Image 1: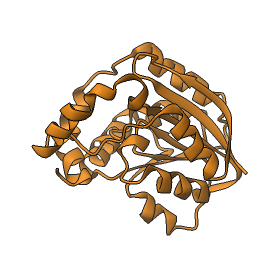
Image 2 (image 1 turned 60 degrees about the horizontal axis):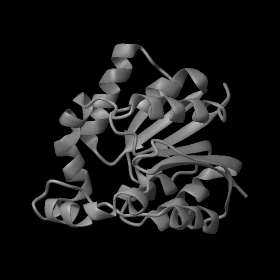
Image 3 (image 1 turned 90 degrees about the vertical axis):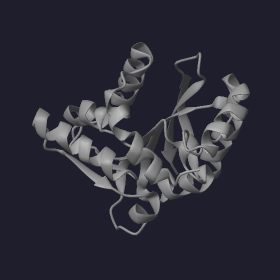
Image 4 (image 1 turned 30 degrees about the horizontal axis):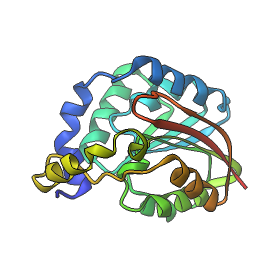
Length: 207
């Protein structure tokens, strides 16, 4: 299996051309996210990919720091920001380990469709908790493949062996909720959309 950053670097250009799979579910995610933002909010987004979501949320907040492990994803995202003349989004190649070494603490940390792709999701949620200001929010959406698509396991395993798929965790709803609560969060909102893939949207508050 390729290293995650290498895999996503090689996939970035194709990923950038791929349309949103479920426009209605994506719009719902943006709508619910915006309900928790304000003009003074500083967001950290992890796993920002080619920057689509960060750029869509830019007008709703003061500042976004959008990060990804893929340098190529970040290059594409920066190009989009320049083309759209959006100046309050900073794109940066970084991991949670890199970010944890900074002194900056955020009002919101967002992670959309990323937790199931991180080497250690539980440790990642702990790192996210540490990056938030007291009372800050973790807003996430995670495909819970253990709920809706458990039969994909052998296919993904075979694809990983030949470098056609990244690391993927099959997380269930209860496991995800417990992981977030155990890190010191209170879940204040949740939903599942799109329902067909079991993608769980969660807003959790830093204790």
